[in-house]
Image 1 (cartoon, rainbow, N blue to C red):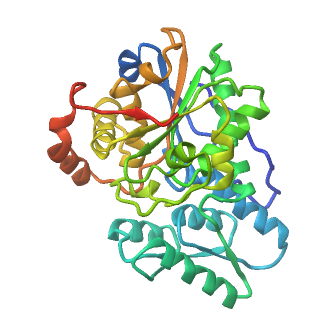
Image 2 (image 1 turned 30 degrees about the vertical axis):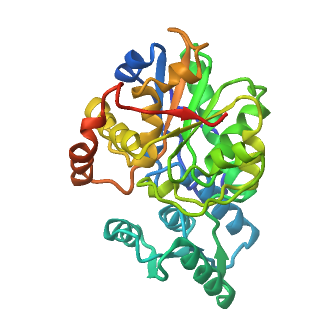
Length: 346
């Protein structure tokens, strides 16, 4: 394992970056299933517990630099823990507005990180509308978007710089990336990083759950569309419409859209705990299921024993031992190759 620095905008002497370079760890268990070398990019180790520290962290950093010597209160309705940890590292404050469906566990984590939590509305859209109202009434307020902003994509792009340097340190090249898609912020950053490095031929598997497959719907319709609703258990991926830029970047030939079931998402999380002692939520487990349920071989038949695949372990904030045990009880009977169903959208 090699750790390298990949910072697009070095901080001033009085600031530190709101994200870190995370380990890249080769997984023996995943590699045996995949028939190639599978490396886990451990972004669950970010300060906020997910990759969102990169994008939202960069967004907050840019906002602070644009307002020197002026206090800022960041307002967020999604990715709130990342906004809180970033604001704290930059000596600012943050308020997170969440809907009534938010778990006590998540509220507690935001508060423990130093954020103010306001509960408003029955859905994210209602919470987000209230967030914007609060920003307008606060002269120090800055709205922090969850995924649809250039500075967020630029921050997420650092993941590509890191993993390529880490693989090169071991004399390896990059042959495929697997990542989960919600609103598309991570997809945008990773795809932009690949294209800028001349790696637009590297397969990028964009994985979504049934019931929240907004990108797959756009690709099928060949245009930007909005889902009627979100029904997946992978609530961290529950966005009715992906960013326009995510759809545009997904139309590049290397992106391969994969849609799996909630059962696969939950059991992917359970199996990562069993095999790698890593606790992640279904939004991340669904990417692991691409390997466990032999979807990788189907979608990327060109991969061989010497190929290097990076699985982005994107986060695990909304998970507990009790939840994993319940997933095993509810979905464990489906955890056989014959019982799993998978399809690709393009």
